[in-house]
View: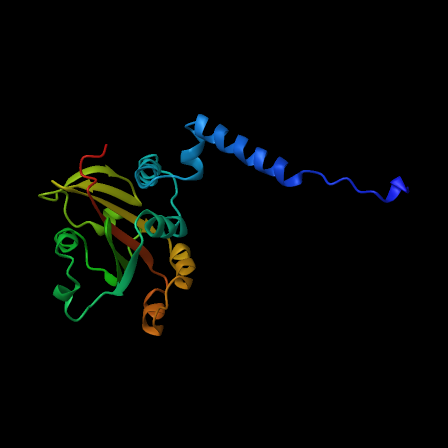
Length: 200
């Protein structure tokens, strides 16, 4: 018998199964690991708010992806000829405290509503036209972001650079007119979060 030609079958699949089982047990035994791999909605929200409050730079792409993963939804063009038909009365109540801008589109989902606009202003302070906003409490404010609360909602305002705006052009099919409008402009997003009014 030629022993050199005999191949011993190794229980490869058994080893793989054991490794997967051990890794799974380890992850569940370490509470800090699972949130990093599979963050919940509340963790995603808290992380975003903490980054804003710590004055960390939130990129336009990161914010775009946050909206999609936190609460998947859909976009609709902003109706500039008949704004009342956009059905965003809560956000409209905030816009009265901001200088005129060019609305582009609205993102709607179960847990949030966002309106994305174009502006030529350099800071949040240049955009807001009043020192006080009756009905809203400003919790945090910087040159590029603002967090506000009403009785039952939280509002996040972020001002993105023109480069961030240009990078997001690939996510949506902008019209030629909108692309022309976006030249040398910044992107301002106002997001209304539902059910987050009591968050700290």
